[in-house]
Amino acid sequence: MLPARSRRVRAVREAALGYLLVLPALAVFGVFVFYPFAQNFRLALYETPPYPGLPSRYVGLHQVGQVLTSSSFLQSLGATLLFVVIVVPAGLLGGLLLAVAAHRRLRGMTVYRLVFSSTVVSSVAVSALVFGTLMDPVVGLLPWLGLNPSPPILQNTTWALPAIAVMAVWQFLGLAFVVMSAGLSAVPEEVLEAARVDGASERTVFWRVTVPLLSPTIFFGLVVATIYAFGTFGQVDILIGYSNAAFEHVNLLVYDILNTIQVTKTPGQAAVLSIALFVLTLGVTLVQLRFIERRVHYGS
Amino acid sequence: MGPDAGVEVGGDLHPQVARRPGRPRPRPGRRWRLAVRYALLTLGAVVVLAPLYLTVVNSLLPPSALAERPPPFFPLHPRWHDYPVAWSQGHLGVYLRNSAIQTVIIVCGQLVTSVLAGYAFAFVRFPFRRVLFVVFLATLMIPFEVTLVTNTQTISSLGWYNTFEGLAVPFLATGFGTFLVRQAFLQIPRDLREAATLDGYGHLRFMLRVAVPLARPALAALGVFSFLAAWNQYLWPLVVTGSGDNVRTVQIGLKLLQGTQVSHTDVALAGTVIAVAPLVVLLVAFQKQLVRSLTGGAVK
Image 1 (cartoon, each protein chain N blue to C red):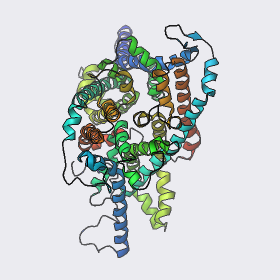
Image 2 (tube, rainbow over the protein chains, first blue to last red; image 1 turned 90 degrees about the horizontal axis):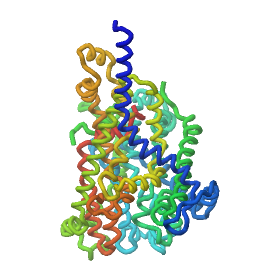
Image 3 (cartoon, rainbow over the protein chains, first blue to last red; image 1 turned 90 degrees about the vertical axis):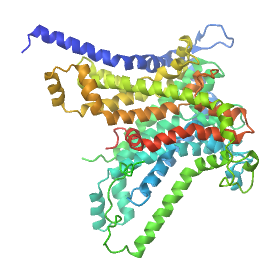
Image 4 (cartoon, one colour; image 1 turned 180 degrees about the vertical axis):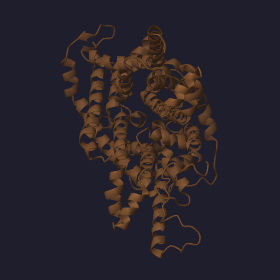
């Protein structure tokens, strides 16, 4: 047994080592996550004067109310929510369908799986360029197939948002497929077999046994998809831009933040929008936790 | 790809499908269903792959053939001319190099900080360890977009615009990665740590000689994940490499290809193929690690 003093020295040295190991990551988080996050709440109270060079002015909550009730914010909020409502279910359902279809040990399945997961490598820019060409009014495939609204899809106030959503869903499919497949492979085959022996049809087995057993995975996918959808904006930046006729209808919240920083150059307003985005993402996630996770079946 | 690369996903053996020689041939109804399943799988594969396939086809066509109706679905006379053009005029060679540098810095940085912090959280005893761990997890709740306003100001005051520091430093630590590595370290038997202590191993030697080699699968998964995320970043490179041709990444290069050369769709598409090619290689080579990392700890 060591003497008490030596044990204490050892504990102190161990604690010092612990802090030292945590420090690099903590420093990065402090400077680039927590500080800028907290800073939003201070910036939101200051207004940028109309002429550059003047100091910003303290206006309290005035600016917060002004931004949150502005028509441009409300339009952006509406577009973002609509976008999320399209992308999340479509992406998850698509991934689930592909995963169910590929969940058999058949000849050639390795190739199908590789194909289905392939879009995980695609980036925002890649999906934008690929689909931008497909939707081009002159050389595009979609106009040739008869999908040729006027004005063209990406300048069309009705169709631009769904078009961007299609790109986002396609880009998300690979991830959704990978996640759903992994969940499916964890569903024990004996349970499904037992249900079949009891005379349940394939459809009943799927809805009453597979889906409940898969619900933790679906829930995980739901949270990931929601965060992904709220963060999307790149396709709008590449294909539409803020001078486009359809811009107001696809002005997703992140794009609005970016333009408020870079074009309008009003950090205070951008901070208000950032807080709104944070509250929105967190709120939706919490609602999902509260109301949907109750229906999730976690195995014993 | 190895013959068993797909087993990770949906590896269960389905007795009703996996026929062994000598068994009775399947009933006609079953064969029908098999055909339907393959038809659905192929349909899914076509939908998922068509956008990228058509991009490759279009990149091999002369500009005049792009607008042909019906559109050519196969390049009868492939023309590689656009690739060197995209490479040199679109500066894709430089941008690919920049993306590679940025990605390598981020991947290495994240691996190092995650191993250090993950080890501290798993093996080292120090006050407020739990609190700090919760702080690390809290970073997952703050989307990067929310910190954009102040981060751009930080980068500007550090003089890091158009530098690799500016591109990479904010991403040198990851809460997700730390969590992943900590979970892997926690699976190492405590006895092993005690035995190593008796052998005179200090923390650092144990971490490097025992813990890290044992956690290799988790580290590989984290590496692939951060590679993908870093390579495909769009928002941050867009913001911090506004005028820096010498640090601009390939994703932003694609945006410029799309934006400046409207009449050169074929070149932009060739650029897209060039940008996505390294990741396709990565997907084929590391499918298993990718699946493991994308599903995190959420799926058993």
